[in-house]
Image (cartoon, rainbow, N blue to C red; front, side, top):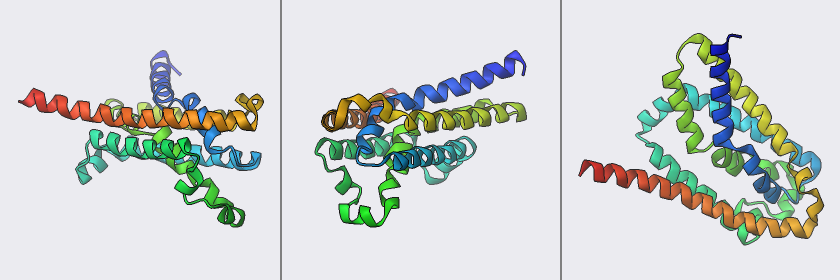
Length: 217
């Protein structure tokens, strides 16, 4: 692999990890999976990574066409993502995330798959593969059009998805010494932080819209 191709791979891979920030999702993952067994956490981590992968691929190859077809702007995606994040954060803050996701204890006992639905939302989207990641890949599609560059982008996406699994799978080891009470307290703090993240997404979108409006005026 030449220096140029290695540079393309590193740029794409580094940008994806920076924006998706799987390490920043560790406390959120711990808060959302505190009642799950180790095998269920591994399954959620795997399914989250597998959910992120098609989102990244779809964003790179078809993101610009989807936005154009539905008439959706990046700002609209930020608002929608912010609302989902804030809603999940509020559920964490009040200790009602299970009810928020429709996961009653009786149903959990009958259907483990119901407990695993958090792998797609809010973990995969919008917490990891959010509007920023989608817009980044749409821009990469404009910049890297050659066959070699496309293969490098695909390799970077695959490696980033693998890193997401490894990081999430190891999340509970990081907070292992905190204990149950510490994790419960951490969940409340996480809820407040997640709400703030959601609000930040919305503010960012509104700032972009207002900035464009004033520039036109």
